[in-house]
Amino acid sequence: MKVCFTYSAPLSGFTGQVLATHLLLEHLPPNFDRKPIRLPVWYGSIFELPAYLLALIAAWFQIVRTMRTCEVFYINAGQSLAACVRDGLSLWAARIGNSRCKRLISFNGNIFTTWEVTSFKARLFSRVCNMGNVVTIVGPNQKKSLIKLGVNTDIRVVDNASELEVIESTSIGQKHTGDILKILFLGNLLETKGYPEYLEALANIAERGDLRVDAVLAGDFIVDCFPIRFSSKNEAEKWVADKTAEINRSASVRVRWIRGISGAKKVEALRQAQILVFPSAYPIEAQPFVLLEALASGIAILTSKAGEIATSLTEDSAVFIEPCTVPMIIDGIYALRDPETRVRLATSGVRQFRSRYSLSKYLEVWEKLIIDP
Image 1 (cartoon, rainbow, N blue to C red):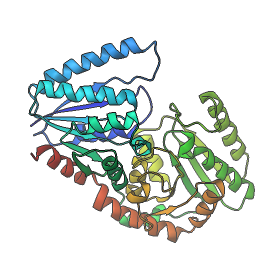
Image 2 (cartoon, one colour):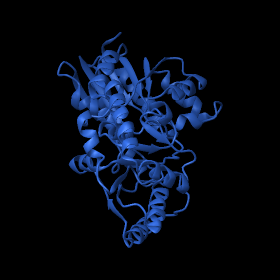
Image 3 (spheres, rainbow, N blue to C red):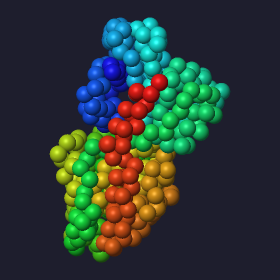
Image 4 (cartoon, rainbow, N blue to C red):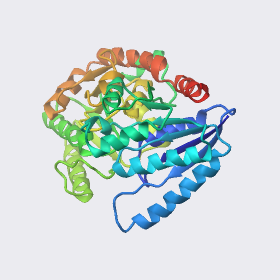
């Protein structure tokens, strides 16, 4: 079966949208003939608009040509106004190429849950959704929002997955031994993801001096649509450098900043970590891949209930903090200093990963979505 996979990818940084598509492109069985098409991204600069439009028109012609021999059109769609226009016209191009093709629209972000039903963006978005035969999202709250926005096509909740090798249950206890607590923050450095609060919590713990910590801040800056305290990337970078230097002057806490982490470096950071701190207040949080990676790696998770996080984890596999303030993060870290607590959470998390977030389960769901009429 021939499938056209269409998606957009930023020039830099990590997105769940790209990872979700790459899992299918790289791991679907050989009987699926995959035809990837990458759509351009426009960041709002008027000077970049002509090049963007030329690239987009070329992509639309490529979709029409490709769909002449493809039975299924998959698009991992964006949610900005420009993305709605781009992706809606991409769906039209697919129909021009093959009017009888099956159209699968997948969403990984959560911004549509914040829109007023009567807004122009919401109306345009629902029309784009209704061009598909199936729309997939990652959580039940998102499904409710789509129905409220007037989406009347087939809506399926499809969990994300991770291709990480799952830690053996017998190794979890060993991972959580030692006198030094190993803590990790992993993700794009957006203010509302909580990295400033993470570093401030570490600084406070360093000042107390009663807990030995080896911490990692893993990630890099991307365009931040929800800035709070920093007016520029340079200002944020300087603050992080100064704060890490301040922490490292203590005798009990060390923190390393690993930028642009991926591949083997990311796997190693997850293998070493005992606690993942992910205090997200990101307004458009959905189902972060890092939480699934932490489950697979036998890590105790300290996180928020933003987006679909609360429907993705359970109280048996994570400690939820609300609100994600510095004192709450500190209290959560001290609660997780007990190795038995961490092992209990990590063991439950591994079970949850195997039953819900494994790559094999993800592929099984998508194979059925692609094949079923």
